[in-house]
Amino acid sequence: MLEFTNKQFEEVKIKSEAFYKNIGEIYCPYLKEKVSFNTKGLEHLRFKHRWKSRPEKDQYMRLKLIHLAPEVLKLSHTVQGILETKKFERIRMKARTDTILKPVTYFEFISVLKRNRVRIVVKQIENGQKFFWSIIPFWKMNRETMTRILHDGDPEED
Image 1 (cartoon, rainbow, N blue to C red):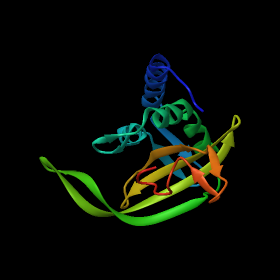
Image 2: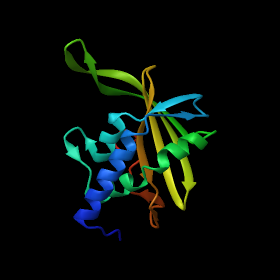
Image 3: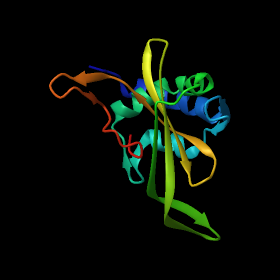
Image 4: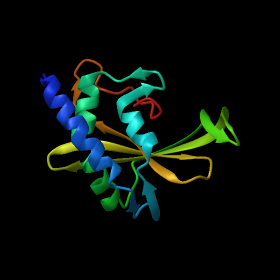
């Protein structure tokens, strides 16, 4: 079981947020373009939905492994999954923010780096810029159902 103190959580949070904010953009060979590390990705690591934060254990693991995300994207010449769907997205238009149904594409890259197996999700809204969306640590399998434990397979929430 993963154990950590509030002090350790705050240290990881501060350190990883500073690291994340300094990444900027990373070129991904598979996508043949740069992937932006913007505030949407950082917000998604800390919140499951707009008003619901992730459990601290979940945040801790994701933030602790965030340094692997740029490396995975730099080294990725293949994609493990692409999901095209429509989602309601908050879009800033003129002087207000609207929620509009937009086509969204998720690109999933899985890698094992430094003994950590992680899945990196890159999101693209309509034909806009691709940006880092999430890092999902692969923890373990449920032996009865043979399903992964930690996430439920929905890139929007994972």
